[in-house]
Length: 127
Image (tube, rainbow, N blue to C red):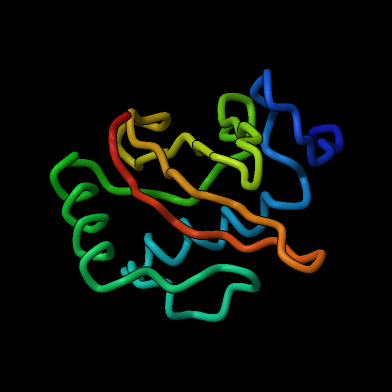
């Protein structure tokens, strides 16, 4: 079990993914694994993805040529976020069945609104 990682608003350095957000990111990837690229299932704080963006995400994963899988604990060793004066830019390293750690990454913007965190998926791609 990994140690607890607090939410940081460090504008200079990247930070590990906060422990409080990890289940949300795991749920997003689980939805993608199950073909829900619009994120229409109810994941607290996660905004639905537009049809255009959902198709782009699905196509990027398909073009990569490997099968996306759920996030293992190792994901948190290499994934990071950065405070950007009003939101966090988050990059989650993804895993595939065929390769384990892959070149794919999930890009998400996280905002704090009224004490709650809002997760807006930007893309899944090879950065």
